[in-house]
Length: 121
Length: 121
Image 1 (tube, each protein chain N blue to C red):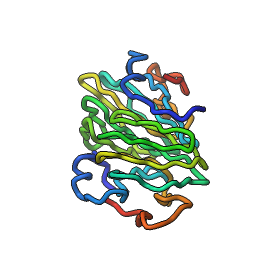
Image 2 (cartoon, each protein chain N blue to C red):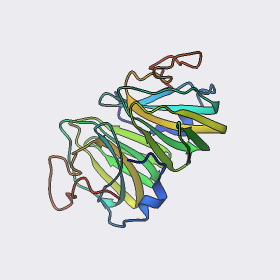
Image 3 (cartoon, helix red, strand yellow):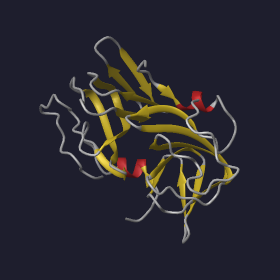
Image 4 (cartoon, rainbow over the protein chains, first blue to last red):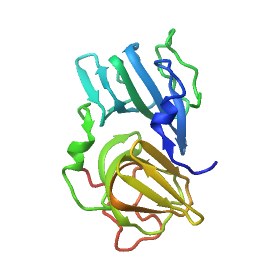
């Protein structure tokens, strides 16, 4: 694979659907995925892995069972394994996810917002 | 550990030295590190891991033995394991590194630019 610079804006321009992560790079057995958030997701957790959200644009409201944490452009948050969370974005928000290859967006919850995995931008 | 938003600008304000990565978060056995680049680093490689550079500000010129790749703010690059590289920044550049815990900045090259490892911002 060619070693090249990967441009977030360019990759974000290739898709519009919210809650539909697109892989843009791999590092060892981890993937970097761009995702557009709009509205409220579903409560879920990932039993086997932490999950990282780097906010590129907008504001991510990360709901936890006991509180909510706002994560803005230029900020990141790591959700530890096993911790229930529910992402929400009142206005469109762009996020770079970092997590091991194979992680499904809805974790153990499933449901209609479950996205196809390993789709590249 | 409290789950909280981690602000890049705030963490970048806590140190000035170039080529001195500061850990700001961990995800599984990986670390996120902020680093300021200024001038030219040393040629090195990491035999056991890929290494990710996410450029937050400025331009990173990543030298490879056969060419150079410019990586600008809003872009990232993954350097595969074993590939010799030499980062350079003509003007100060801010980068978010993602790599496994324990990776040393100069890889197998060593030398005076080798930074203390696992220093948190």
